[in-house]
Length: 189
Length: 189
DNA sequence: CGGAAAGTGGAGATGACCTCCAAATCGATC
DNA sequence: GATCGATTTGGAGGTCATCTCCACTTTCCG
Image 1 (cartoon, rainbow over the protein chains, first blue to last red):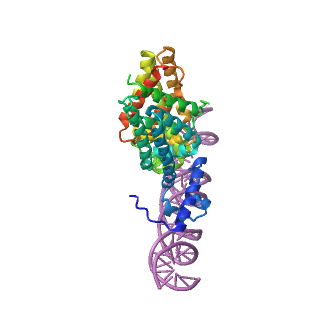
Image 2 (cartoon, each protein chain N blue to C red):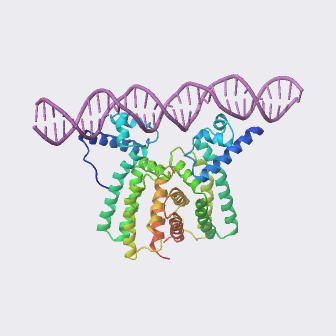
Image 3 (cartoon, rainbow over the protein chains, first blue to last red):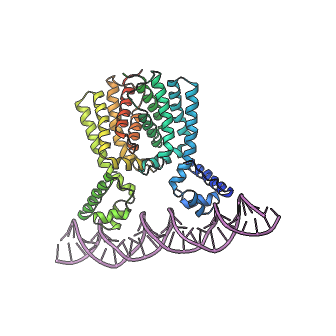
């Protein structure tokens, strides 16, 4: 699966240029406003090269998303290693809101892509989901969190936060959602 | 604002035909797979007529969404009139999951459109949001729900449920999200 | 019923997406 | 550092969905 053939030097350079441009555009939120061909022009490569590396718009977004997810998973692991389980979960979720707030355009674009039933981003999300599942499971083992609600619900809530980025009072509401989730998880009732 | 000119008879007929077809396609989940022109052909009208009534795909979806929202708001009002506030809120939210489950394609399409920053559906959503806000406010007045978390958070959670419709275990997770929200709302802690 | 206003429909212009292949570039080998 | 096969490039052009435009039809009012 990870049998990445050693890419030729120029190929790698072009690939990086495309990814860098895509990340920039994604962060700016203009991902869908731009003709796909223009990614190539902006990155200084030909359209053929663009399509060779990323057959579709979605593939390009997914590649950027991948790096994003990797960073978030790292963070989850670090938190889990240094904090009590319940606190690690809370800190991670609060941090997710910060992260989404800092990358508004990316969040919105990914939300759009996820809503498609294409499932383009499913693979990338898997890792993130695993990280959240681990955090929740650890908190359950500690007895800090109820065991009758799965981590999937937390993912859904996060999804809602990311997808609703155009709400006028987004930040406060996002924090509220996390509060509800954490308080709702706290006790088996 | 509501100065709807009295539409001519044939115009109204065509408009209805288009809406009916659109609702059907939306429910089937094929909304984006279809050439926009084909909505016209399927509804038995010309492309020009389609564009006259609904300048964009989004406008067509919004028109369908409008009816949907109106029905949901009615339901909210009825519940609020017949049940204690907390119970009305819980019943409404549980019912939303049923409703989304029953109209998967519609939910997914709307989620896609909402993620766009176009804000096409913002107007339609306003009414739904008002209904949820009323339900929450009533429950707060009853003392059954904390007052430091706004209804916007509940909307976000619902949004997440609707947007994540392709998750393999959707139904159970959606129910869990509602559980978390309701339990999280229950006590000021 | 007659005429003006409102609405229709579909042919065709527009422009985005993607393919294809001759030319350029790389890097292994001598 | 020169040679050569393999890899990668770039962008011109084909294809196809979107949307416009206007000659014609339908409605409705007096």
